[in-house]
Image (cartoon, rainbow, N blue to C red; front, top):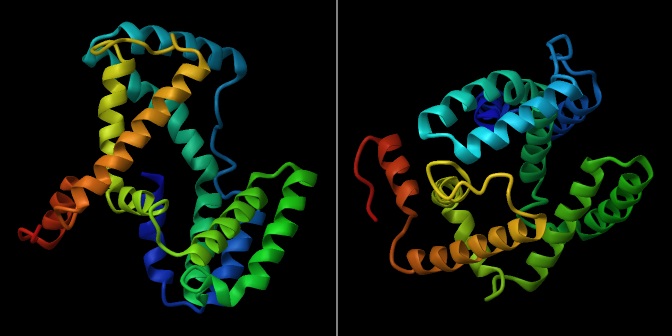
Length: 239
C-alpha cells in the first residue's frame, strides 16, 4: 500500500529533469519527516504484550479472529510504521526514477566508474555510520555491474521469470504461509526456530523460481498478472 500511494504521488513529477528528481530525492531522505508530529509506535511494554497476543491468536485463532486482530494491528502498528518511513520511501523512489532516466540501470557499463565508486564509498559509509541506505546502494551497484557484465544466463533467468510474476508469487507466498502458520492451517506461528523458518523460506522461493520458469515457457504473463492486466485495460488480454 505504501509503494502504491507513493507511486500515485510521483506521477505528476515524472517529467521533471533527472537532476531535479535526484535533488528532491536526497532532500526527502535528509530533511526531517513531515509525519514526525504523528504518534509513533507503542512503547516496549505494549510491543511485548502485542507480540504475546499475536503468537496466541495467529497460531490458534479462527479466520475471523485473525482478521479482527489484523485490523487492530494495522491501526496500532503497521500504519505508524508506514508513515514513519513514507518520506524515506518517496525519496528513494525519486532517486530510482533519476537513476533510470540517466541510464544507470539500463546501461550500467557506461557508468562503471561511478558504480565502482558507489560500491566503495557507500560500503564505507554504511560501516562507519551504521546506516542501511549506503549498504543497500552498494549492493544494488554491485548487482547491476555483475548482471550486466555476465548478461542473461541460466543462473539469472529464473530470477527474471520470478520478477515477471511478482504479483502471482507474492499472493502465493501469502496464501501458502498463511496455511502453514495461522490457526486455520497448521498453526505453526511462533513455534519454529530461525533455522527451520529460513529453510521453509528458501524451499518456497526455490519452488516459485521453478514454477515461474515453467509457467512463462507456456504463457505470456503470470495468472494474476494476466487478470490484473485484463482488468486495467477493460478487455481480455492475450495469454
